[in-house]
Length: 259
Ligand SMILES: C[S@@+](CC[C@H](N)C(=O)[O-])C[C@H]1O[C@@H](n2cnc3c(N)ncnc32)[C@H](O)[C@@H]1O
Image 1: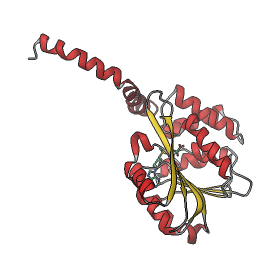
Image 2: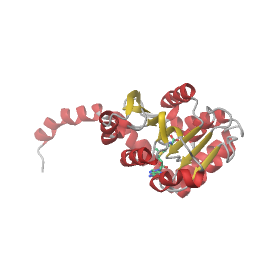
Image 3: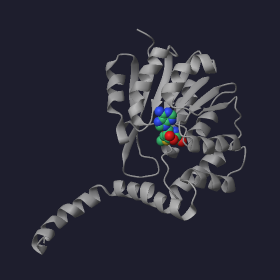
Image 4: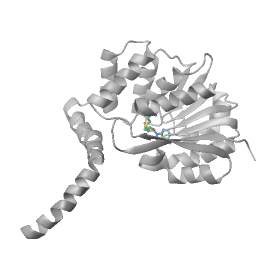
């Protein structure tokens, strides 16, 4: 039995930890506990739940209203790790600056960023969005089409990124990638970047934007970006989507061209 005196001695430490890490507790509660309860109560997946919400709140053919509904749901109902509006503005600005014609997205999930990217692209540009989870991809497909983007504007590829990257030229006719948005599992960032380097699809000025490089973090990827000499790079600091108080950032890499 722990004596009350010892328990009391640990109380300040416990309180300090709770205060210090309160935002991580909020994240755990929203991302895990609420999701688990809702899965039990509704009997459908979180991705289907957000789709139902968007169907009843957004205007078909209007990407802005689809994004607003996503943000409302993630702020007020349940947490989903879309990049959210604040980091989304960084993405919007970079797309505006670079005006890419061929874009690759790794990690579609429900299609939030696919819609966000597609609405910022010039006419005739193409987005290839890669998602390996079939359930997520089914929802993303419905949301992307509901937003008004056809298969020519946004092609959803349902396979793991390491199977897709080597086939982009042959199967999808891609000659050069102007912009790559990475938001899939963080352990895949570095191997996929190296695969892209080897594919010959990156050209001088190609941009790679990688989300969550601070939280959960992608240290090997950042080290390679800094040390390989292949990129000009910077980190855009921000906070984690839909949760205040957790620091995060997006890495922007600009390819200097093959050495
Ligand atoms: C953080 S979510 C993407 C969020 C999305 N970009 C957004 O902000 O709207 C990550 C997604 O990447 C997918 N994923 C993870 N690793 C992958 C891989 N190697 N290839 C394809 N998809 C992957 C997961 O199934 C998940 O749906």
